[in-house]
Image 1 (tube, rainbow, N blue to C red):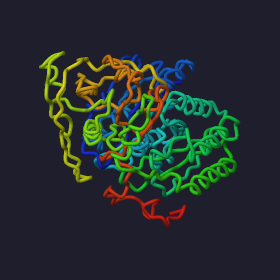
Image 2: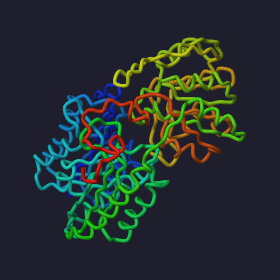
Image 3: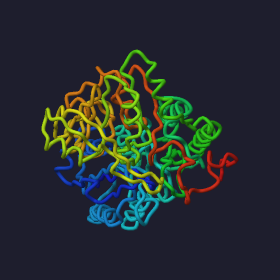
Image 4: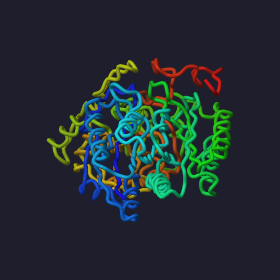
Length: 491
């Protein structure tokens, strides 16, 4: 048996001003890629384990994973796709892909579907397994050109390797002739709010639990729910599901309809109501015990935000919140200033606000902050929390500015704080702080949930806003809920 294993992941926020060139993916291949990702909580690690368990020969032509940002450069997409397709063309018995499910390129609104179409054009009968992110926007092209699809069942995503295991094991069974996968799918016209999607809570919890029980009990081979990625102005955005039956689609179809009917009935519960920033912070100030995790979810690089909007931090400083750890803020210029000054130096920075977001009519606006350079690091650490466990992180050169009783972590690279290592590697223990201000939406719960006494969601402005009325959508299928309250399930 010979297998091709590959990763090409990107979540595209079509409103993000940030470009996504090839370098953003940090593409790796061969033995170096295998060594870096072996035994990590990633689908590709599960594929490697499966290939070695089966005694298969395998090649890894690409592991590329870019932080969420704007549309992927078309030449970059073509180069990465070509590397995977060349490995398939060289000869193999099966393909296992670790993709995201919400990639948009400069020329294509369905990057994953296009990659799969190209592979199938080379090898029309090739067995293909695909592991997808919970925030996949399902398309007909993805389904038509895959054998098996599974998706993360968690958000924060702590079952990434398990998802690869589910997809890969089903594909191996199909290649042996033990099962005959039949995929059924549906995508609802729902623009869900990402703060209301998590399977940890309702309305998604028991919908996801039903799918997981069905798979565990052998009712179907695989069952996956996808919350969808709503910050993409494309026709196939929506909440969806894939059910993989064994030969007979009848049982799979019944389960799919049950899951989709329940999600549609709860559509109003997938809407998040925002409140003014000052109201949220005033509420936080009334909480006596900490840590209080303040979550600025409008400017989250994990969904394509620049990570340098200063509105919430400015309000924290204005209100005089005490004993605060904040960051990481993306500002290479300020990092350079602090490095030149050195640890212990007093500096005044024009912090953040270096990025305009034209699609949202937001101009970058730095804030002036004075303080002491407390620490300088290389920004590297290894994840110890439950999401992407064991993965190496690189925030770029990183510096800490202490402004009064506020420690501000500033980095050369954007980084969503889903693991406390973004603070602890710089000598800050967030568990001892009264307030921890981070830019995230849900992933922070993986690393910061265990230390949080309280969580306060703060609706700062940005390209990740939960105010969908602020987005200039042009290409969505319409009608779509909640922009169109009278939308029907089959729109």
